[in-house]
Amino acid sequence: QAVKTWNYTLAPGNRDRMGFGTTTPLGQWFDTEFVPVFNTYNSIASQWLDEATRTPMMTAEFNAAEKAFILVYRKLYSAFLRTNPLVTDKDLVGMGLPEHPSGGYTPAPVATTYPAFSLDTSVIRCLTVHFHDQDSTSKAKPAGQHGAEIRWAVLDVAPVDISELTHSSFDTHTPFTLEFEGHDRGKTVYFALCWENTRGEKGKYSPIASAIIP
Image 1 (cartoon, rainbow, N blue to C red):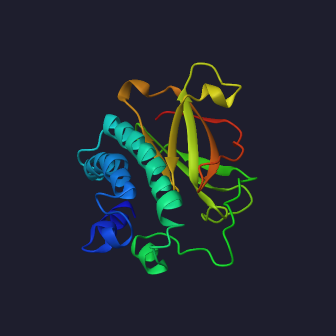
Image 2: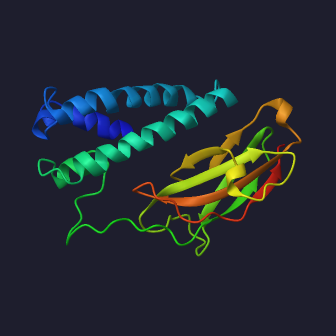
Image 3: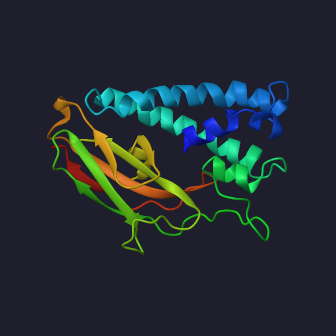
């Protein structure tokens, strides 16, 4: 979706027509704020997608780059595309984004439920988190939710508060996989998940669960 938005915006004539000319304020924001973050994310993603060369360090870099890109991508959509009168529904669809809302804009709700999840430890040094809404068996996310935040930490003592889960990852679609180093095998990793809406607002967290790193 990110590449689709990028390619459509830079297609001949589209950028200027939508108000992103290089000398305009929107164009300058695009070049200085969006382009560097996209290029970093796209480069790391291209390497990460090759499973033959993927490493735990590369996965950590990918997760960090994706988290940074999601923030700037949301801003591009919500501040400069969704309400831009120069951007048509056809443009939004061409970029892989939702059409303009009909009947006025209704802000995405904050989730009142949390993701239920199960952990798959069948692959060595990996934990795969399969998640869905607690009120449904479907893989579909609740209305208005962009994805799930996964808070986690490898700890010697079971945490009592979410703040002790110091690592944060984000995934828009189940499942989510974490990769670990060999020296982490046998240690305990603790998890909690919450939904995050399209405005970056988080719902309540699930109970904290744990698994042994295989």
